[in-house]
Amino acid sequence: MRYDYHNMPTMDKETYFRLLDTFLPSEEMREYLKKEPMQPDSTILDLIIGAPVPLTEKVKWAWGRFKQEAEKALAELTLRPGEILTLTDAWYDEDIRDEKLSFNAPFLSWEKVMEHIHGEMAEYGDDWYDCQWYVLEKWIPTEAGEMEQSYTYWIIGDQVMYYCGTDDENRMDHIDPNLPVPFHVGDILTIDCRPFAPVKHALLIERGDNMDCCCLHGLCRDEKTGRWRTGAVKHWSLFENYLDPLYTAIYRLSQFDGELPPEEKPLLAVQRVIGGDEEKGRMLWKRIHKLSGKELTDDTLQGLAAELEHEEACNERS
Image (cartoon, rainbow, N blue to C red):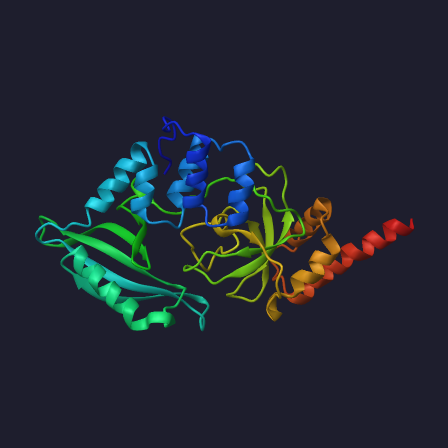
């Protein structure tokens, strides 16, 4: 759903900078946006809502309908007689390269949920897996003598970050702020949506006008199939059909200049061919999509890169 984006409280530059520091983990993105004009009200509210930041903090900064509904969702964690909370463990399983869920326990109060989570965190200590989270569901009794689910909350560490009600008109997850970026075609970017997915890397092959929500296109490896895929970095299409992070890569987006893992090294060959040329990146994107659903293997990707390189050499000789 979309909230009432208008009537944003007056915000001076200092307050805006504090907002960016609070809701945008990527230092490169923060510093870039601080030099740009202030983003529109709608983008600022999307930034707040979608951030991997505690819901209690979002309520402090938000306004309008979202603020009211988020406050209500937090208040609903206080149970009335007959209501219960159920906790489910969730994590990224490296063996199956997908999300797994396992029922944990039911609880009669939010305080007991927190006590239980703190106990697990203390037990695991430094071994706490950075790709695990909790799903908390609230259940309320009905007149028919059954239990009905009313809210779902996603907890990272010991903080509620996202929630949704029983329908799409009362949910706060999967919000993708349309922010401009400081990165350019040919940059290798870190894609970090933990805990919902492991860290991976993408080659930026299109930047466009740096304004449209779909202008930023990356090439990355699909962990599930081992094949390559393209997708809009500001959305979720770099994970489409197998993982479902609750926030987009834009929040932690950063340039990568380290050593790529062996399975991602084909990106280097493509990077070498494209350089910083947007037109070459666009040509590669078009050729990938002409494959008509065929799997994009390492060999196929490197073959497409070689074709572009060969064509460039021929053009230089002619």
